[in-house]
Image (tube, rainbow, N blue to C red; front, side, top):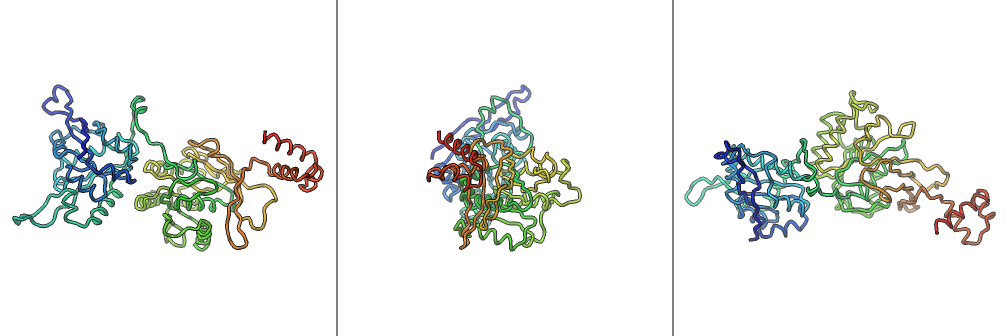
Length: 493
C-alpha cells in the first residue's frame, strides 16, 4: 500500500494547554491507498474521503477514488471538540490530489454509528467547511453509511458499517448510485466572504477556467447576446447549445468536449423549435444518443420559470444540479422575467437575477442570456445588466443587397465586451446560413472587416480584366477599382 503521510490536516487546541494559548498540532494522517491514483486518472471529478484504509480500498476496488483518514483520526477530532474552525489547516495531500486531478466534488463518508455522535459529526462538518473555505473551486459534502442490517454469528443485531461493509451487504450498483446521489444533493462550495493575503494568493493553485466552445465561452462565465427582432439570435443560441451538448464545432469555434446544456425557451412554438433542432441535428449528422441537451419550452412545460421571482430561479438551480448542467441558455430575458415587480429599465429589478447568476457561476455553471436590442441598436433596458457579464455579443444586420433566396439567418457577430478573451478569439464574424435545394444547411463564415469587392477585384485582375471592365462588372467607379486593387496588393505584402 502506497501511503503518503503529512502532519496536521487540522489544527486543534489542546485543552490541557489552552490557558497558555499554545496550539497543538494534532496528527491526523491522510493516505492515498493503492489504486486510487489509477482510478483518478480515468477522468473522475468526484473524490471520497473516509475513515480507515480498508474502507477506502473497498471504494477503490469498486471504481470510486477514495482517500483515507487514519483509523483513529476522526475520533481524535472529538477529543478537541469545539476547537476546529474553517481556517484550521488542511492536509496538503488533499489539496495536491484536488489540483492534480481537477477534482470538483469531495464527499466525506462516515461510518453509520458516527451519525449518533453530535460532537464528532460537528467536527467532521467543520472539517468539510475548512476544505470548502481553503481549497478554491471545490464542492464538499458529508454523509454517513446506512445502518447495517441483520445479525452477526452470535445473533446480535448489527449496527455500524463503513463503506467496506456497505459494499458487502448491498449490490455494487446500488451503493455507487447512492454515493452519486449524495454527491449531487449534499456537496456545495463555499459561499461566504473569503479574504486571502497576497503571498497566500500567489501561492494558491487556482485552476484556469476550461473552455466550453472556441476561446470565448468558458466554464463558469456569464454572457449576453442581443439583437433586434428576427435577426437570428435564437438560431445562433441553438447552434451554440447543440455544439456544447454534442462536442461539435460551431461557426468556426472549436469544440472542447460535450457538456450538459439546459435551454430555457420562453416564447417559441413547439413545432418551430422542433424544426430548428431537427435541422441542426441533421446538418451535424448526430444521433439522439450523444446529445446531452435539456429543454424547457412553453408547449411542453405547463409552467415556465419566471427568473424575476425566487421560485423561478430556484427551479433552474435545481435542474442544473440534478442534470449536471454546465451551460444554461436563457432565451430570452423579456419572456422569462415576467413579474409585475420587474422592469427591464430598472437596475434594482435586475439585482436579484444578477446575484442568482453569479451564484450559479460560482457553482460551476455558465449562463448565456438572450436579449432584444432597443431602437438605438444597443441592448434594451438598464446598462447595469452588462456590468457582471464576461462576454457581451451584439448581432448586427448586414447592410447590403447580396442575400440570395437560399440565405436564412444572416448577421455580423461583434464582441463588444470580453473580460478574458482577446485578439483572434473574439474577432468579428460574418455568418450566413445557406440551405441547398436538397435541404443541406451550411454556415458561410467570413471576416466582415474585409471588403468583398477587394477579393472580386483581385480575382478579375488575375483573369486579365482591365480596371474599366471590372468597374462595369461590379457596378463601381474605375477609381474605386484602382483603390481596391492597391489595397489587395498591400495586403499581400
